[in-house]
Image (cartoon, rainbow, N blue to C red; front, side, top):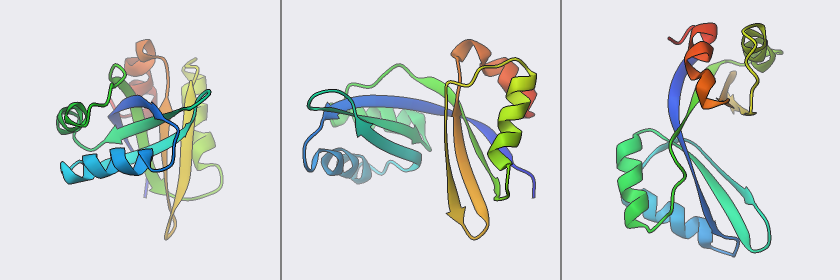
Length: 138
C-alpha cells in the first residue's frame, strides 16, 4: 500500500513544566471531545514546556483550547504521512522534498505497529503548495 499524505493543521501552546499540567490540558481537551492525529510535548526553558497538536478537527480544537485557556500559536500547515513501514520510508518522503528544493523544518516519525508507520513533516509555510505538488497531495 502506498503512503497516504494529507495536509494537517498544526498548533502549539506553552504550558508550565510541572507535574500534572499535561494531563490537565489533555484531559480538558478530551472532555471537550477533541481527538488528535498527533500530540507531543517537551521542555522549553526554565519552568516551561510546549505541547504540539495535530487535531483531527481544527475548529473544534481551537474552541476547546480557548475554553481551557490555552494560548495557541498561529495555525501552521504540516503534512501527515501514513503507510506500510519499511526501511527508508521517511527517507523516500524527504528525498521528494529535497528534489523539489524544499528545506524541511522538522520531522516526527513513529512505527504504529502491525507494519504501519506515521510521520508529520513541518516546513516553511511558503513552501506548502510546492510541497503538496512534490508529495502528490495537491
